[in-house]
Amino acid sequence: MTVLTMDSATTDRVIAARPGQSDRRDRAEPPPAGLRWRFSVAEYHQLIAAGIFGEDDRVELIGGDLVMMSPIGSKHAGQVNWLTNLLIQKTLGRAVVAVQNPVQLDDISEPQPDLAVLDPRDDFYSRSNPTPADVLLLIEVSDSTAGYDRDVKVRAYARAGIIETWLVDLTAGWLEVYREPSPAGYKLLRKALSGETVSPLAFPDVQIAIDDVIR
Image 1: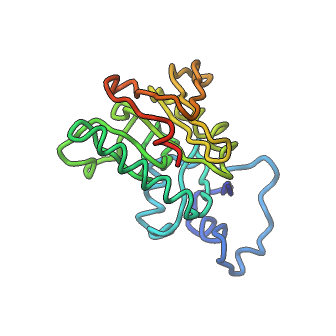
Image 2: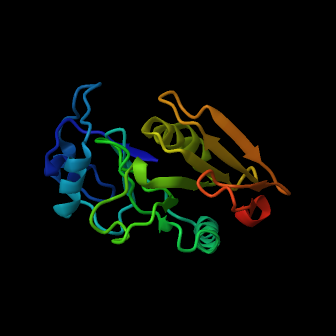
């Protein structure tokens, strides 16, 4: 993960910080150590509207920092596709399943979880991005990013009051179920293994086999 931190919110500074782009502004003296700009969600949206970040740029806002997400490999993509299909079947007509779309946690965080299971809404969240009150379950699929997802993103979800987060650890081969959010993190963690089942808090009648979650 690459975090972009800047000493001003000007478009020039953002363009100069983007990978693969270079001009004479790149040769400017760096800001003094310790100076950083924390973007708000509103400022982040202004950068998107100005065309600084396009549809193909994998960027999310975490705690005011712009974070360049890792490229998606075929294993990760396939797992997300499989889980999307599974969750749509399990929650048909009872939830909106959003794939790698933004969720606004607060004024300085708008991550893009791999999957978000949301309260149904007639506009399917076209008028505004979901907030924690809309979220029934967030899911992150992790392979090489498990440490970052666990230590940064899951903690951010807990601070925002997301009632339940799942971390699918493809390397370890288990599902981490996080519940009881608090400002310090989730109070409850369950590691579900092959042969076990889990039910989302929002859908206690839905039984999901771990062997169907991790393939």
